[in-house]
Image 1: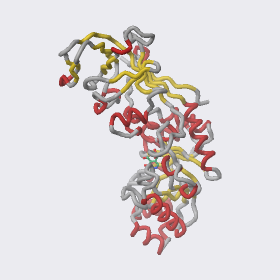
Image 2 (image 1 turned 90 degrees about the vertical axis):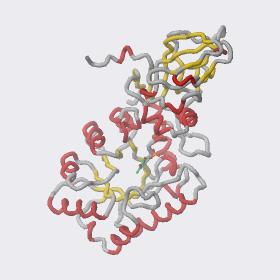
Image 3 (image 1 turned 90 degrees about the horizontal axis):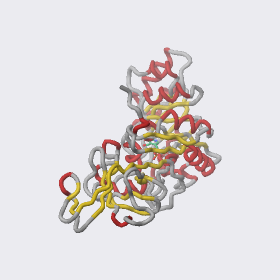
Image 4 (image 1 turned 30 degrees about the horizontal axis):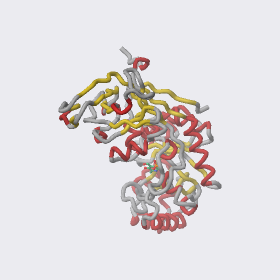
Length: 370
Ligand SMILES: Cc1ncc(COP(=O)(O)O)c(C=O)c1O
């Protein structure tokens, strides 16, 4: 039987207007450079196709995914968009790029040669991106491969380059020395390569300033409300609200304990609200005994371990107040008082992990995006 989300107790609201506003904020900030959008990992957990369509309506024309399947989904939904796969071209995958008109990212000299051979044997191929490494040691031509290519550019003959790109390692720390070093390496690299649209910055590097913008930028997490830089206020609008339904309120008294491993022990009479969400919904276990939720403006601490399907919050201090927590109420697990960045901090992780872990069991509501 198909799942009927109308019975889902907890609710995830995704504000597509806020994503569009964040995209426009970035476009204005980097102008005259342009911006694409990174929509990999199911649009950072928010729904790849629906998010991409909203971004397209806001003017975005270049989309970036990690995997081919993700790119196919976006391309089929938005045929006139440029959709790039960033993880690289593996031998044998060339025909898929041709069939779906997707843009491969050539991440090594071997990949350049594979694509060149395919270009010689085929007409009407999509453009390709060239990525070289400037300090991440992950994807992209290694420095010695870049040198080899720049000494003899012939492996690029017949390849129609769209973007030349690299990726920053430490841009969320504004004063990290690698930031300037990577910017300089990228500037030197693009000067030695044929002219194509140059792009280096993702969310954090965008806010390092103009020197990092080149022709185009490719933000991901900032579009979805993630704070780009650790040491600066967040200029992005919050996109999601996550409300967890209270399914029971119970009294516990000292020395009773709450949850698995008895990790929380009541020192006196406590009121515990049990909420229908858990680690199976991406409310990760490291939030045990540390997270906060909100009833309107009032914070309530999570006590005990995060279970698979339920969370337990101490709501004692709200008893007999206007914000008293009752069965059937909704608590903001992520909301205006406590955003994805706050929850990530409590979990000892980054907002990317909070977003991409969001489970499939919530009732999802989308706002706007036209
Ligand atoms: C190559 C590349 N570009 C852009 C992005 C987007 O980064 P962010 O979400 O920090 O904006 C990522 C994300 O991991 C990436 O791997």
